[in-house]
Length: 331
Image 1 (tube, one colour):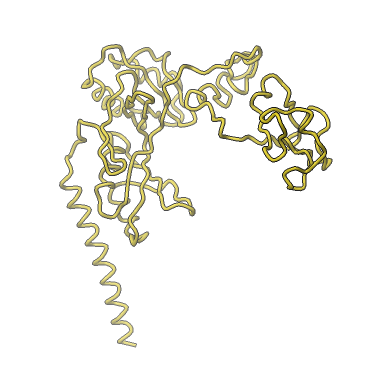
Image 2 (cartoon, rainbow, N blue to C red):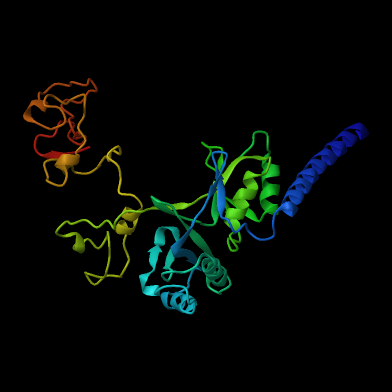
């Protein structure tokens, strides 16, 4: 019994010493880091250091929950280098607000503005926006990490705790962690992401940027789009302003791809409708000449692709278990 207790004691000592060594390694690494962030913003990607040019058009802010619009306005009104609050852009899906900068603002003033906003009550964090030819990258409070093989959960937790970082998610199907810095002020997300990258216990680490494509504002020219309050609510039907799915804001980020196939599970769609005809998916296994368009020859009453569904050229009526006979196709 005494021998067993001795072995358990020795095992506990080894575990404690391992954790202590890890913490010493981290502390030493942190002690070598500059107390303030590198004024030359950068991150690591593909083994290279990528410089991050500051945007001179906007900065990003996340306000604390419960801060009203008027309170937000009062918070930013006295920043002389900021533009008009009415010209801000709300990215509600990310809980961020992009505040415009005055024209001609110097780079040094931008860091002063961000530091000033970070010192205000009601602001969770303010971060820079980085300007690239095709897109703007917005720094958030998250970064993505893959830890080296053999690094235990205990070591990961110790590393995160020491750096004031918490796990946001770690899906079972991936080895990548999404982590969040608890204090995202003072450019901490960028600094911490780089610190993790430079650590021997990680494979890679990079900020979880929000990427905003530089495209012209995307607003459909459909005749009745202005009535679609669910897409963009301006109070046009007496409802609540901005109580919608922020469709135009999402279209500014991405407008979709012809490579993406959308299946509609409903009573069907009119595949001959002028807004849909050119974009309808056509089953290549059922398509007959001329290829790429739906014609009468496609309805040949044969199961050409052998999947058990006759003439499922652009869908199937699963309720009646038959091909659609008119212009309405059920998926």
